[in-house]
Amino acid sequence: MLDRFNLTVYDGEFVSIVGPSGCGKSTLLRLVNGLIRPDAGEVFLDGRPVTGVPDNVGLVFQNDALLPWYSVYDNIRLALVMRGVPKENQPRRIHELIAMVGLEGFADQLPGTLSGGMRKRVALARALAYDPDVFLMDEPFGPLDAQTRISVGQEFLRIWQSLGKSVLFVTHDIEEAVALSDRVVVLSPRPARVIGDFSVDLPRPRDFYEIRFEPEFQRLHREIYQCLIQEAKAAFSPARGVAEGVHAQ
Image (cartoon, rainbow, N blue to C red; front, top):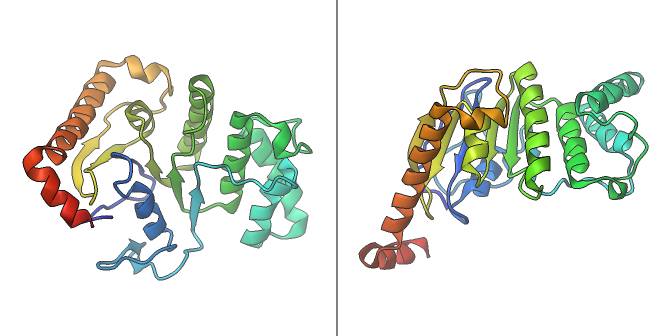
């Protein structure tokens, strides 16, 4: 559930959304992707209202959603087919994408034979194959272990910096949000509203891991955490909790 919600993402901007579980982060992505319609208000993409699923928006789920009976090659090819890329142009593009995400030598492998991090790379390659103007990413690195998360995050950051696409990225990880983003938007508990909008003034290109040791990174991390924790304390205070519980129903 979203309430009095207003957010603008600019061309080429990387915006991360953080907030408590169940506040409406995934709902926001589905609204932008046209999978659900708002009860009130409107969603605009390039100045036009979203009335269905836009052709120029790609959604990357927490689950990699690969077809298990398709090889790495064919999972990526599926996006090119949906995009209408001529058949004769597909092989070259597929091999470019496989190389881009570091999966050379795995084109014929089925998803079940790959590690979690490798499957995420295939899902990323498939999203890149679709070539959207806007990437919507719903905790895409969430299921990965810490080391793999850093590896895949660094790879995605490198690719994004070379493409300059707009990204709306949902995560529970404040460190991940600051390391990746131009802005970090903080949402309140349900019904979600924007309670913080932090510009990330850290130089690019960035190292997805090393940037965490910068003083500015640590300052932003503390401020975002305090924003989240203060709102959570207020939401569950005895005086306010009952009223918000009724409103959420």
